[in-house]
Amino acid sequence: MVDESTRKTLSTIPLLKTKAGPRDKELWVERLKEEYQSLIKYVQNNKEADNDWFRLESNKEGTKWFGKCWFIHDLLKYEFDVEFDIPVTYPTTAPEIALPELDGKTAKMYRGGKICLSDHFKPLWGRNVPRFGIGHAMALGLGPWLAVEIPDLIAKGVISYKEKNRIGYRVEFIKTYLLL
Amino acid sequence: MSNIQELEAKIKDLEEKLASATQKNVREKIETMSSEVVDSNPYSRLMALKRMGIVNNYERIREFTVAVVGIGGVGSVTAEMLTRCGIGRLILFDYDKVELANMNRLFFQPHQSGLSKVEAAADTLRNINPDVDIHTYNYNITTVDSFDNFTNVLTTSSLTDGPVELILSCVDNFEARFAINTACNEFNLTWFESGVSENAVSGHIQFISPGETACFACAPPLIVASNIDEKTLKRDGVCAASLPTTMGIVAGFLVQNTLKYLLQFGQVTNYLGYSALTDFFPTMNLKPNPNCDDLNCRKRQKEFELKPKPEVAVEAKEEEKPVHEDNEWGISLVEESVDERDVTVSEGVTLAYTFPDQSSIEECQEATSNDVSLDELMAQMKSI
Image 1 (tube, helix red, strand yellow):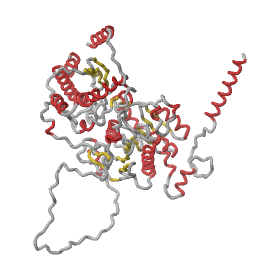
Image 2 (tube, helix red, strand yellow):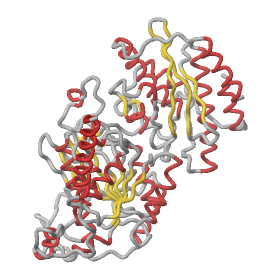
Image 3 (cartoon, chains in turn orange, blue):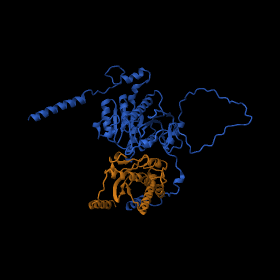
Image 4 (tube, helix red, strand yellow):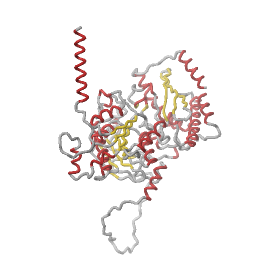
């Protein structure tokens, strides 16, 4: 079910051990720390391998996650907002990752831009509860989805390359500044 | 000028039409169910079940509250059936809106697209049977924000302000099923799980009484219906297929068993499957898993063990005698060694995935939580 390169990526994402969801007060904080540590390591690995492809952050409770992911196609960078909630039954059930701006543009999506994960991802998640975390969901769920869907959507002309303007960058910079 | 007069006349005409369309044939509430056989009695055919000796106490249906979670292809039809049967109170949960893409299913109509499913359904249902008290909740039950309200509604919304008598899961995803399962195990609520496969040609219903029968976490969906190559069905660009037929059939099974459970007639089926391609209807009993992952499920199992059980008469059977009285050579049958991983499942189903193979991940490292605080980690993540 998993090819060699995915297996290799997978082996570098730290595994988690605390089985706790957002309703398990203190244990959830423990789990959340593991999530962050695993994610930080994964992003650092990606940067080192020159394969940086997403950023995520959460609300204070760690129940709502948001950020950006991007995909390079023909030397052009296509960027999308990512968001998802941590379900009450996490980590038994995986988060449902959504790319809201692509809602309605592809059939491989559920309402609200939730990407279709049933086939390639859910069985894998199911047999690795609670060791898989958000990093694994990104690597095994969203990553392969983007790799298949984005080139197809570009070819169909459903999405097109948007040149980032300076104002955009500036707004983003101010936003980041305010968050700090 | 004549133009304005014409328009005014037209408006008046349309207003009259609208008024007559919305007011005509709206029936008044009915205080008590009557079994009188007259054309004007909406309950005469249901009350006839008593005369036929099927149900002893049909009018008790008005004392019950049923919650339907998910008002899609199965849930909306389920809600309509219960409404027509005259259920006391109906509670509807869904966070979605009606879309034109839903029109291959029953119940919703094109003019309702854009409305929230629960509101659109409640409007239609109140019109069909104003005696049913319908409550609606428009949110996603799997989110942390809504879950507490969800459990609160389930435990306090019966006609006597107690827990609802039955919950029907008509959702279309694993996450929502798990959320319902978690709530029902925690608050000891009886429910039916139902589902239609993504390829639209199989479905099932499952009766879940916490501690007594397998919960949804006792046997996670390791098994899927076989006899069909999914790749042939999953065409490019199609995420999920659906048919009004399969969904109607599953809704029918669901409400039939709901009526049997509430009004105590016939036998409630523990698990009923349906394979449309072969018209195969497996039924089975599912015992709870003593090692279930859900702590509350294990707790309910212990409670159930301590409860006195109604005695079931077992037919007396003559003891089988051995074919040969003596065994001069000491011959005995030895069980063949069985490969532990070879788990057998019922006819018509295969395993979708096996249990974890430790070797595949042992080379991974663990995310160990040392003394770093969560705030520090969040800041670190943000600054990468």
